[in-house]
Image (cartoon, rainbow, N blue to C red; front, side, top):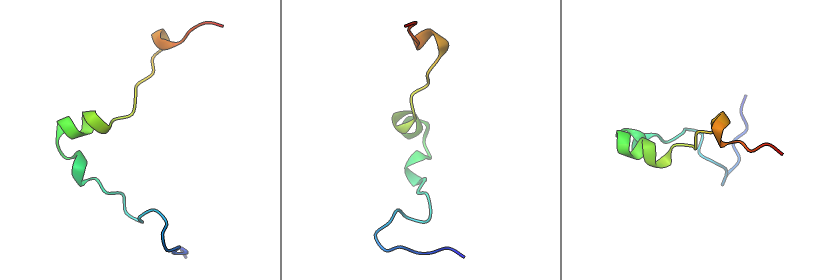
Length: 40
């Protein structure tokens, strides 16, 4: 059973803005590779 707290994040993730590839690339998280790391 879930508890609904008013004012919290929506229960559903809204994905309408990510239907086009341009929008997906715009909001995509950064991709980190080994070449991006710096040795201490």
